Image 1 (cartoon, rainbow, N blue to C red):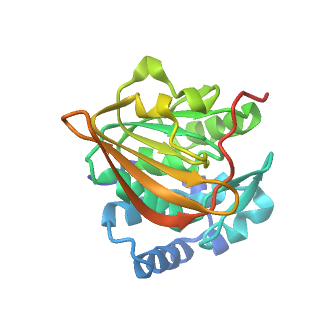
Image 2 (image 1 turned 90 degrees about the vertical axis):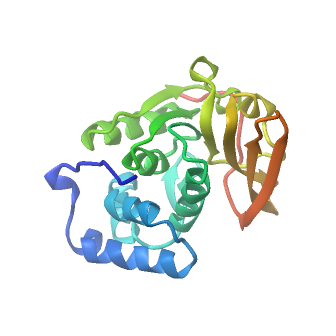
Length: 225
């Protein structure tokens, strides 16, 4: 599976957003344990500088989270890569993302040729993300809604990825997983969170594994315009 993203010519950028800078980020991710070359290629391909405020573009290829407004952040590239790598182990085709944010994680998934559905509770963030998807020619399905309820109309999903932390896995989301599907989510409170992978077995049972310590913004209910 190889990234299918076709960028507009003006999306490539120069200087601190150049291919050389992206290649250095990919090398750092490889050294930090990201081994899936398809994931690394998607990180190299997707122009992260288009998913942050223009004033932060020179920091876009640092391995760090950055603010995107409304108290939210664009996740650290290592976290995006690790979650995507864990998700791909189940060879999914249809993926639900909870917490669109800037749109970067959804863009990485779309670049890998996956069918992506994404839900965002903050209307302003979703409108900006949709503009980015259109600019990059991405077919990402998006919805303004409370992410804690998922998107049941299109369930079941081969994988679900949650980009905000809750004290426990949300049962409504677990219920939208297909047989054999995996849910990747940060679990915990403000002081301690772990990235967890839950897999629904063919016999209906659930396997759960802890992947890494992480820090995410909280998963909140309701919607904002």
